[in-house]
Image 1 (cartoon, rainbow, N blue to C red):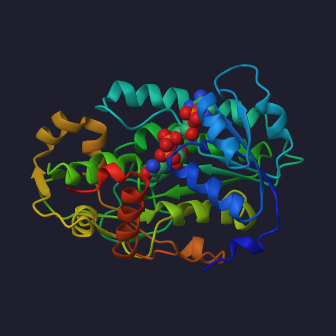
Image 2 (cartoon, protein in one colour; image 1 turned 120 degrees about the horizontal axis):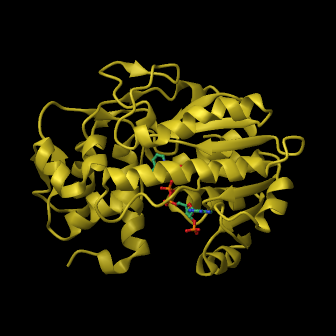
Length: 326
Ligand SMILES: NC(=O)c1ccc[n+]([C@@H]2O[C@H](COP(=O)([O-])OP(=O)(O)OC[C@H]3O[C@@H](n4cnc5c(N)ncnc54)[C@H](OP(=O)(O)O)[C@@H]3O)[C@@H](O)[C@H]2O)c1
C-alpha cells in the first residue's frame, strides 16, 4: 500500500471537502500531516470542518469575490472536487445541462485564481462516465471517449483542461469510476432501498461491466496524485476488478443479510423512474485499467468490491445506527 504518511507535508487547498469524496480526501490529508484549507459555501459545513482542524473558508466559486482566492494562491497543491449537486431527486436532462454550465463556471473561477508559480499540482477530479461505452475490452486512459450518463455533461469541462494546461496550470486529471461508500448514490440507490425492503433497480438485457472503487481508496489515490501525478496526465481511479453493475447490490445485500434485492427494468421504465441521466449510467459498459495509477506507486486497500463493499456497509451502519435492520 502506498505510504501516504511518508509524503512531504504540503499546504493543500480542497474545493469540495464537505462532499462525499472530499470528506475522505480531507481525512486522508489530515492523517498524512498536511495543512488543509477547505472551501465551503455553508457555515454549518465550515464549523464541522474546523472541528477537524481544518482552516475552513466560507465562500462560493460562483461569487466574483471571496477570501478563498488568497488561500488558493498560497497552496502547494489544489484538489478540485467541487461540483453542482448531482444526487437526490429525479435527474432530468435540463438539470444535467444546468450542472454542465455551472461546472464550467466553477472551474473557470478556480483556475483563474491559482498562481502557477506557487502551486505544484492541481488534481482535477472528473469521472469515467466521460469515457462511457468502452465495450468488453479493458481500456486505458488513451481510449477514445464515448460519453454516457453524466459523461456528456462533464465533457465540456474535461475538454477545456488542455487549454488550461497550455496556459501553464499544473493539472493532473483523476477519473474515478463508480465510487461506492457509506453515502452519495450508493446509499440512495442501493443501501437505503435494501434496508427498506425495496428493489434495487437495474437495466434489463445483456450483462454490463463497470469499474468501481471504494471511496477510501479513491480519496487516497487523489491525495497520492498531489505528489506523484504527472502534470498533463489522466489517471483512472478504479480498483483491480471490473464487475457486472448488479454485483454491487448483490454484495451489499449479502453484507446487510437481506434477499430479494434486484429488479431489472427495460430502459424506458428505468428512465421514468430515475430519470434519463441515471438510466443512461446503467446502459454502458466499461472495464478500465488502473495500470497507470499503480505505476506511480499507488496500491489499493480494497482491490475489489468483494473486499470493499462489506467494509462500506459496516461504515454506513456505524455512522447511522438508525439504519440497522430490525
Ligand atoms: N460520487 C461519485 O460516485 C463520483 C464518481 C466519479 C467521479 N466523481 C467526481 O468526484 C467529484 C466529487 O464528487 P462528490 O460526489 O464527492 O461531490 P458532492 O458530494 O456532490 O460534493 C460537492 C461539493 O462541491 C461543493 N460545492 C458545490 N458548489 C460549490 C460552489 N459553487 N462553490 C464551492 N463549492 C461548491 C460542495 O460544498 P458545500 O455544499 O459545502 O459548499 C460539496 O463539498 C466530482 O467532480 C465528481 O464528478 C464522483
